[in-house]
Image (cartoon, rainbow, N blue to C red; front, side, top):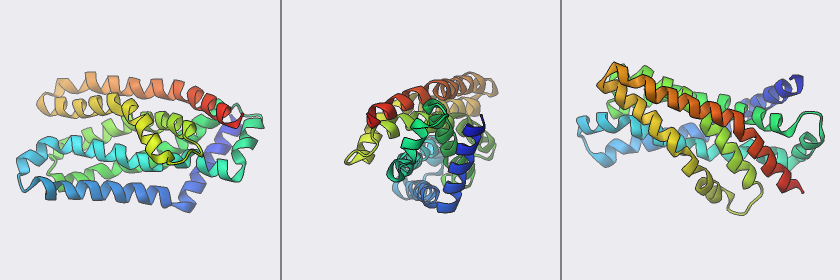
Length: 222
């Protein structure tokens, strides 16, 4: 586990030092949410109803922008080959890099959601629900995204191909993330079922995605 923690700390330090991927994701998140009221008009009731969906869709698209960085930098400087030949299994290396992406990108995006909810007239009692569902669902975004990042590594127009690959995988996370918030707004008892399914999706993604990403990386390096 020492190698896992070392790689995790290294990727987090690089993410903080560079800051470009996170800044782009946060900026895109802000722009998308800020433009929605302008496009939909001044109907506050409408904005309140669709605010959870807008926040979730904007978060998915913002996170998508930073997915190529999971393996791209290591591939460019040759570090990925060293990781593949090192003592740390490639599955654990993929897991560490996906976890670093979630900590450096997924968590900041989730914590920014309540601030952006003000622009959408989101009800105050929905703020903790939005943060809770996003913190539970964003691990799936990072770990499933690592599969697409590995498959499209060094591909021409990889960003477009990456979006086509991973967006269908994000649909269950999006559905149950929005459903949990909407159900809780109607009835306090309606939150648990969707939230548990959302958490299960993230747990399954954390458990299985590193193996798929590692297999894609091995196929790419052959």
